[in-house]
Image 1 (cartoon, helix red, strand yellow):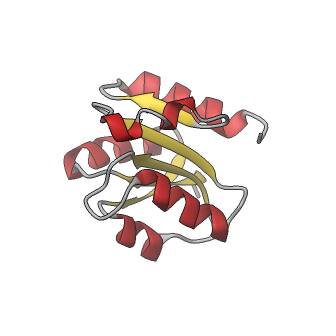
Image 2: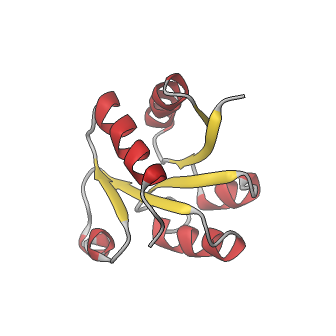
Image 3: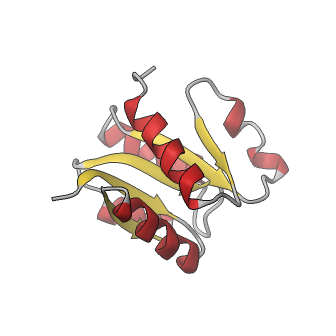
Length: 122
């Protein structure tokens, strides 16, 4: 069995596939979704970390995170964006928010996830 379960919610299926490969090679289990509703349907109590785009086709990453945090308050949440629209500029500024700017390489992603998973919850 692989390590902690990570739910990746990315609009770009190719990007999600690449992240799955990188994270599984690093020892983590993954689930993927392209839409917030799909992520809500796939979410289980075993998910330890949510890695979501800030903007999804059917919702925002922020709305998805709040919904899932109501189901599991210990869930670690990470936002990612390739070009932060004005409406989402506040996300990286919130206390306790984990944010990674795309594009990022495999080593950067693995290091980021390790840091988030090992940091004490705020």
